Image (cartoon, rainbow, N blue to C red):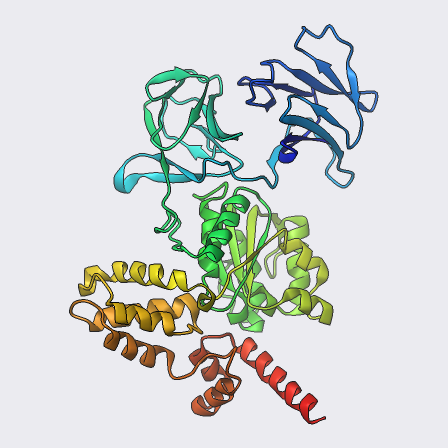
Length: 515
């Protein structure tokens, strides 16, 4: 398949499949490839297939010039900043006559992160403006669907430009108004007011140290980089693998990918593969028919079916048994699910986000995780650092959790001594442990949360010396103290499989040392 990449300053912006009637390029609404650059003409050129090659017809002089040929991996300059690059996608699907556009990795606009706000106060909807832009209209397929009869199906679009964002009208019936003035194309920034039909929208800057609309809270450089990637990956349909320790916030990241994705109003379904009994995994994932096995008293929908039209978050995918890995791979390859006991399969449309605390590449090398499945679930990778590596986040998370509890308990702040005690703790249970400690301390306090309440909460919830990474003896101590691996893992706030792996590693280390 022939594909065209729009470049700006040598960086890819978007890719386009060249099919059907071709692609018109210009600096105006309604063209196939809109380039907002003063050096690009309103009707600049037309790309089309001719005798198996791509022809470029210059439209600036009404097509009087002879078309030129654009060869594979050759670029056609539109302006000093913009160019079109031809690439060949030999493995892609065959052309069907429909134009398809998709975002690829781009740099975020220099203007910084902006949020489009629809509505007011508690009813407001927020949409982060990232590299792929958003389409606004009354059609269900729009990124920002509006229930307003005076809004066209595809009314306008907000897109990145060289130094920020622009809004352009898509030949709507009633026009797009920017700060009260009807316009076709206009730059927008913090404070810009938009009106489409009877709906008011506004552009605001986002304070990234505060809680976001997806509920994530962060101020550390490490997590802000993760959140930047979330906003870049979310609008794509591709699978994401999130890796991090238990309690680090992997589910929150998955939910953010869903909320910033193409279908935030669709279902978000979660399942922990490591917490399922082996005999129930197949039924949980794919569902079953009545009478499919003993105890199947009725039909049951699996999580893939439940997540149709939305996102499926499959946690601890590294714990999936080999036979279920093969079954999952078939579903991802075909897009079809067959319930246990059913004769026929059916199609599901699901965005898959997986998570693990394991090194899946190492599991692939040792043969316990399928390589073909690994590449099916890892188009993008997100590494969530443990809380002990990002002390900046301890402060903002503690205040955030305290604020969520204050309606019940009253405290509104932490003493400096309490904060220093939180910063000194190593948080083996990560964000989940911090939340529990703050909630416990806030409940015990009648005013400002002081160091005494924090100490008691840490002792009660975390127990003594539960840091596994630096203290090898803590695992053995926990097993001896609690009497079983399951109880020790629960106390340490790590998956049982992690505890077993570390015990095996310690045994191997001792053998190597004595041998």
